[in-house]
Image 1 (tube, one colour):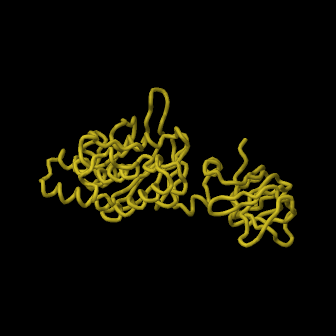
Image 2: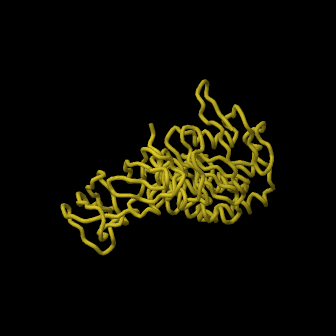
Image 3: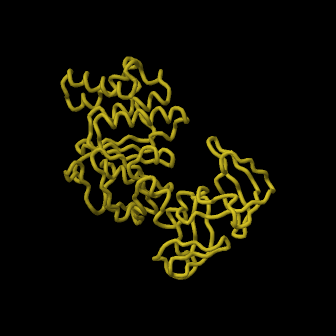
Length: 334
């Protein structure tokens, strides 16, 4: 599928299959085309080429309301004059569902989002997290085969984000739609997804399970987008070895001889190893759930995981060894 806005290609040659019951997360830089992709599937943007199928049916010529794909914008809008229940029931009333079906399905959707006790409230009396839950309940009430969520957690603080995310996963497990979520948060992506797709410059650069994606980015562009902490210059000998000021690593065959770049996270660096490369601690960085060491080395500054139970002082000397299994090497860009 492709989408153009005037002379600009917003999406190019995008091929994507999302199965029923699958949780698929789309990430990528701002402006890469993530929202455009969701809106094209939902019917709010017309693709210039390709096809769109939902539940096996070609929907490219159908209006949004007939596509069996529900799109939820990152800032959910509720009808201020309707109660929570009537906001959730609205899609069913548009379909002219029976009153019994409306009562049953809207009630179940609200319970799935833990909002049943708020059924008779109006939106202005709810917190931001509660309004998100109501919007999600409205999105799932018709049990669409495909649910498209654009940055559903972006406006929430960490505690509300966790609650809304758990409510979404619980609702998904109840009726198993295909779920496509756009997010900028890598933790949200990893916590939700069966697979993650990386969209860069309007094209799918990689699709993989979360563990595979973050451990083995397919391209240097993907690795840089994922903000993998360390990048060092070196050379490939064409036989599966990469050499740099940090020593020689066996990284597997397939990389041509020439300049190369090794990319690796803090967990790939073993600190205090016997026979390792000399390093000096220049900073200790404390995060809410872990710490890392910034190390001055012959290859530049390297970030390493801080081994548990050890105290490190800025200015002290140590040694490091790279775990080749956690290092990915690419040919250096021209």
